[in-house]
Length: 174
Image (tube, rainbow, N blue to C red; front, side, top):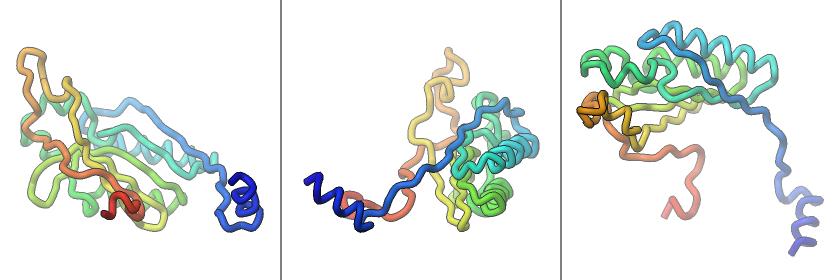
């Protein structure tokens, strides 16, 4: 078996893997200040491009801020939410991705077509493709708001789907 694999590799029947440079970033967001937070994303993407990074991942809800959201009213959360892909943050991520030839993942509050709000994660790719992941399960502290009130923030909905990049596998295609 190993000799067949070795022969296949030498004859280029199996594509060779290549090394890629990946970066993750953590930064202190400004609660509710999407413009400032996007500025930080721009800064880190530019720095990563200088190091020839091909994929960069930012934290969930890094564009809107995270912990303060659990204490906002529905109206407050809605004010931070954006449609994907039409919203300005997604469009800027796509622009940055194309400009730097880098896949960029960043979190925000997504406003779905039906008005529901999700803890979303956008993955913008240099060819213009886009993927969106909706968080499946909220952390207990996200839901609680305060320990005495153990409730889920009514402004956010858990996801009913999973992220898929590229073609489904045979098992998923069913």
